[in-house]
Length: 164
Image 1 (spheres, helix red, strand yellow):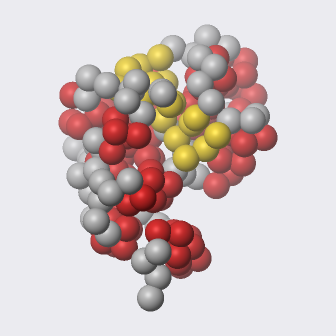
Image 2 (image 1 turned 60 degrees about the horizontal axis):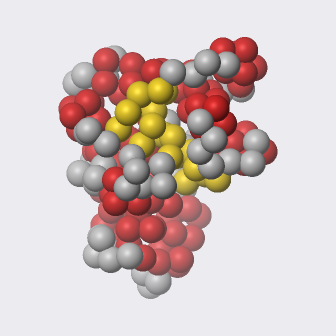
């Protein structure tokens, strides 16, 4: 199975040393649009994820051909999110990796399955690839600078059976 990713999931998982979970979850690889490559690797050379993503042979860059669809999506989304959704539809891939709430909603309205950083970590906990979801969520917030609401953290920990 293959998925299309926006930058936030790549950056966040790389920041906590867990970007390889994506290959475990999607053994056929990850496809990213050019806008995401530019944001993560080219513009983000000094930030988390740039080196990991640039050297990951299982991540490929795809060209979105329906630029009018991207323009339509750009009314509500940033370039990377819009291209990721458009690329997922173009390539007939049902899963798109997105974190931003509005982008997730748009993708779901287009009948795409959405998985975010927390969802990848939940999956990894469920299959035994990480020992503690709590530790990974703490790392996301402290090392990765990732904002998670208390409700999202509590719900994720409850789902993983790690609530106190």
